Image (cartoon, rainbow, N blue to C red; front, side, top):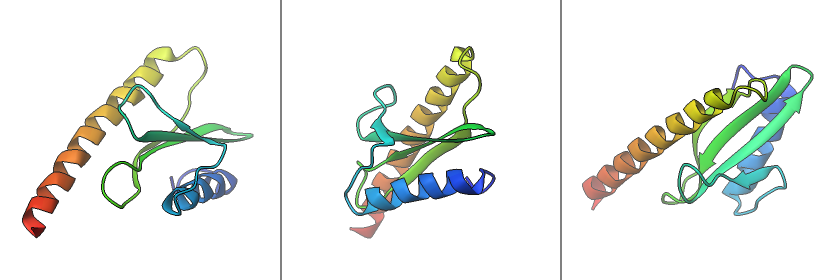
Length: 105
């Protein structure tokens, strides 16, 4: 996300901060494809639309799973590949959190 334009970083950062406080701003929307508890934030500027995908359903933390610049509307295959990447990372994240919880108990 550090490569995103500063205004986009501010928008996404604010949405993540609100999520940490247990709130949800209008730009945050549930994503139904990757699994429950996965949210998406979209922010735009003159250079394009950017998205960050995060989860609030694993423990007490907010995990940003993926962030990317959205390509043209015609690039449905690209969006599908981004969602598949989110699924893979979510599965890995859940496994890592589960293993960490086992080690700490």
